[in-house]
Length: 87
Image (cartoon, rainbow, N blue to C red; front, top):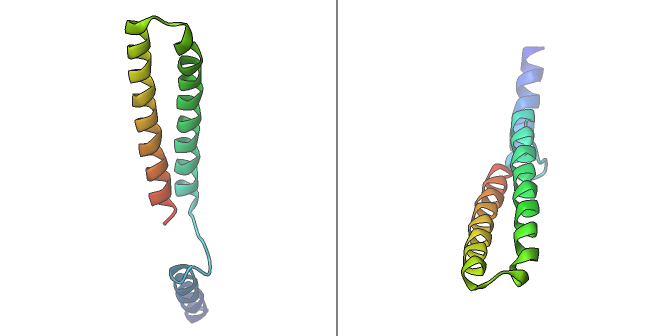
């Protein structure tokens, strides 16, 4: 019985390594979900800023654009983190 489990584990490892099976443990899947949720929250916040830029004066517009750029950078970092977890 122990050998059977070892063979199954070896096959799973080989298949995963070859890309035949895409495995993600529960903790990793949860982390991906949390990171993507954070991306969504940042998008919502950035949307409000982006939609209000047109009604702002130059100084406030500059600040808002800086906030948008910052949010985009954070989202990009989070997307890269999710991609790294999926490898």
